[in-house]
Amino acid sequence: MLSHFRASSLWGALFLFAIFSFSCSSSEEFSGFSYDPEGSTITTDKEITPQHERTIGISAEGVWLSNEFPGARMNDFYKVNDSLYQVVLEPENHPVNNSPWYSFKAWADTAKTISLRLQYRHGDHRYFPEISYDGARWMPIDSTSYVEDTLQGTATLTLDLSQKPVWISAQELLTVDDYAAWADSLSKKTFVRQDTAGYSHQGRPVKKMVINELEYEGQPHGVMLITGRLHPPEVTGALASLYFIEEITSNSELAKEFRGKFEVLAYPLANPDGVQNGHWRHNAGGVDLNRDWKAFNQPETQAIRDDILQHVSNDSLKKVYYGIDFHSTNENIFYPINREIETYPEDFTYFWVDSLKAAFPDTEFSVEPFDTSSPIAKNWIHRTFGADAVTYEVNDAEARDKIEAIARTSARLVMQNLLKERRNSEN
Image 1 (cartoon, rainbow, N blue to C red):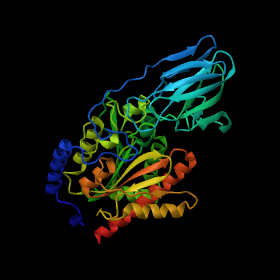
Image 2: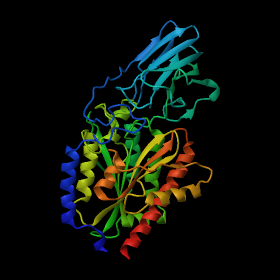
Image 3: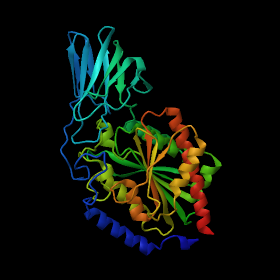
Image 4: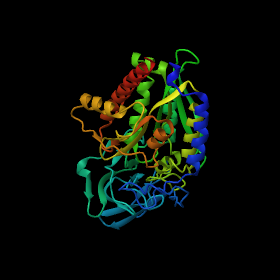
């Protein structure tokens, strides 16, 4: 059994090599994906322009907007004419991928109906609005109250305002406090442990969760790595990651068996500054964190890398089997490693996706393989450990109950298949 795990001396050498080579290397050989703006793979700090937290009102009309809450994004607000108001939305810096986040509260001194246009600088409208009357429970805006102008890159909302505020947001809010409450709830289980891997640009903790229920101390076991929320607006992927982790911590016999053979290291909120400040894409250093997994210029990626290496690299009993990085886009799509590239386990992601398609025949799942040259999280996992890994993107517009069903089924499929791989390795 132990022959399937690397010797501790080799792990130690790997640790030193990874720290040295990935700290000093750059991503010059990779110029970005087709949708990346110029300079996206340069991950040294870039200047950002923080939004001013304020409440802006058209006092004569008694109409007010505010961005004074975590996760908000609203840069300016004014009246265009008697029938139209406009909110201006800008990114933290640019050039930036087109993930134009918005989130603000609106209310009026007396009940009235207004038209509100979302106007973007350095981007075009993308996200169908979610609304809430308490900041906690969310629903899509009624389609009759929403008009998108694809030529102008704007959207206009019809809002019924009163003295009770209504939240309008690109996606539901899922902030640092929400993650903390979720993690605290899971950590009541004896086999779930929270810790701090490091700190962000602005001093927020980059939290990790360690999940295992090993049958006895000192046994060889596999490791699965999970990262999420590298990009702040990608809430559907974030929700999927939480449901996926919850399923691993469930009381099912499968989950118990899995925790007895595998350990999970999860970093579900990798960009706490970007989330808390309502950023479109970047961290507080103005950088796309999912382009910094070679140079490691940013404290968040450094913290996760160092924590993973320190956790597994000097322990011959631990072997990294798999990695998942959760994201969101305009479809459900998996980005696995090209089949021509050798991984362990071999073709794991492809088997998972085939099983998922069978479980949800009415849902479309795309698969687009890539090589391992780009400086993204899943590729660092493969380059460092030889393990298979995937970027899993969840549709921006996917129904929330469907996200949960798919994520929990995915977790069960991954656990089943990893246990099968483990049994095969022992024979």
